[in-house]
Length: 480
Ligand SMILES: [Zn+2]
Image (cartoon, rainbow, N blue to C red; front, top):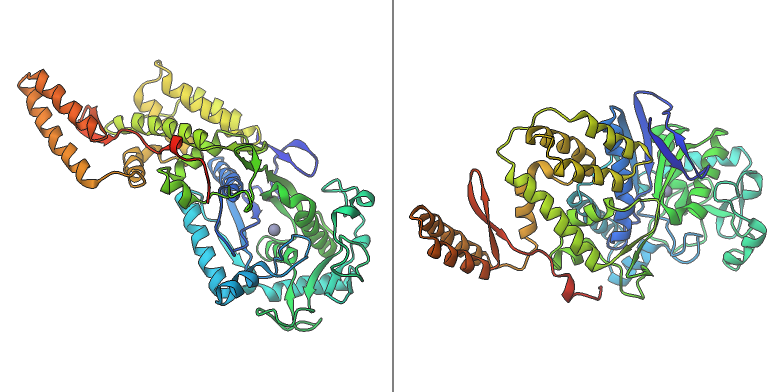
């Protein structure tokens, strides 16, 4: 029985979907004004693992993800300018140029990490009528008032406003700037529709004047449109609890009068070298930074799977290096067994795997089950393969196609393709020497291949060469 740790109750709860055939899931997407960094990817990996595991358990999963291309200000609490427009002005291009560029990069990044693209991806700028609809409903229900900024949500009318995040509103005042909008009734009241920025490039007509939507309303409007008023699972980064998700609940429940989300799943922070990731520290690594240093996006995936999403994790180059080496070992094991046909799944290992995953998606424990399986001499290779492939429907580590995964990894290494060609030619000479039982010559050739930076893999179906070491952790210490 699957249990999910629910942020709303701070407890693990048995999972029962609203509709037994199809689980509904909403994932807060990217604000597409800059590169995706590895902290974002940690959070999207959690959603992916949940999606994949529910599929493995036989559910259909309808997942929606938004793309924020309008309305997200420099601070989550409405202050400052629209992030996209700031970027567009600084590059002298349109906000649409910025949005489409970073949206493309984002989906490339998640694809390279084998993160399943949600069934429905929705851009905020293409759902403004749905947002206006929802805001009208909130207005009818008495949750809004006008300020100099625009139409504002009156949090005092939503009696449970503080509950979800456990906010202590009396002592919270200090955390909110109050000078942004002096006529707000409470510092944490937030904008639904912004009308006081006439120079904003993206703008629409609305019953409250020409303007654009606040950031929070898009998620409530899109989940309502595609998934209905109530959904099973909502995922996002832990930093969204206090403002963004608190406001999503206020909007959705203020409009429908029903409980919005049954299971809230939040991913804890990724720190870098013991410090919080930030632009000023220069430690916001992107997938391209990793590849430039010889690390595969799947090594990042493996590294993140080794830690529990509910706990903060510390990224270091050394830990990524170790993770990649472990993954390479796994791939080599499966590559060497590529000629074996998978047999039947080993039931006792399947049960151990399910027990780990049922415990609120405990991937570190599930990976331990995989390594136990590989080392277990009492399980024959066909059963090992079938069972590992079954696990990999959640892990997403390309275990079934390990040879190809290794070849892909070689693309990120600083190797001269001619050296590989040379090593392959030498290998033919070694095979000939071995046939003639000329062991000295065979050894000499092996050493020469080694000097070129390759190892010989002697598989039952023949020998081939692979890159000897991957990545270069020791030589790297700084970020962008
Ligand atoms: Zn959201």
